[in-house]
Length: 212
Image 1: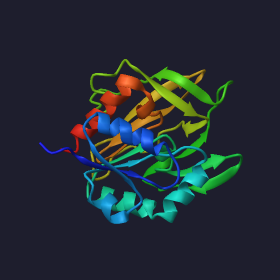
Image 2 (image 1 turned 90 degrees about the vertical axis):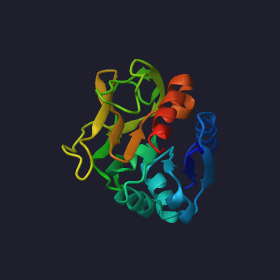
Image 3 (image 1 turned 180 degrees about the vertical axis):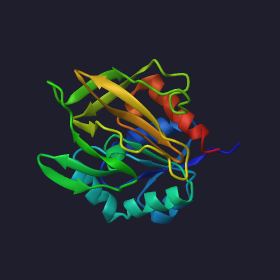
C-alpha cells in the first residue's frame, strides 16, 4: 500500500521539520510547502503553529491557509491542527486584551489559562472520550505541552454534517482546557505530538490510518 501523502503547511509558524520527521517516522510521505494546489491534493493536511494567535493567523492568511482549510473540510478531506494550529481553528483568540479573528471552523474563544503558573509547560495527561480514534491505545499516556492559552469552554453541541465531536480535556492546576478534538475530517491537538515520544508517534499513526 502506498504511503499517504501529507502536506505540512508552511505559513511561517510552527515546528515544521519536527512535524515532518515525526510523520515520516510513522510512514507518511511528507512535503513541507505553502503551495495551495499541493496542499489541496494531499491525503492529509497538517497545520502547525507556535507563538501568538494573531501572528499565526496573519501567516495563514498570507498563504490562503484559512481558505485552504475550509475548502478541504467542505470536501471531507482530513486536516490536523497542532498547538496554535489548533487554536486558530476556533472563532477568536484573545491575548493581552487584543481579540483576533480565527478560521471559525469551531465556535469558541482561545484565552489565557486560569492557573497560578503559566505557561503550562511539560508532560500532562489527557481525558480522552470513549471512541476516540486519535487516542486509541494511548488513552493513559502523557503528552508534551507548551502554551499559555487554550479553549476552556467547548461550545459546539453537534457535528453538523459530520458526527458529533469527540472532545479531549486536560486538567491543569485547578483549571482545565480542550487538549484535542475530533470532528469528522477535522482533528487537532493542543499538545505537540511530534515532541511526545512514542505516544505522540502513535497518535500520528492513528491519524494517518484515517487517510487510507
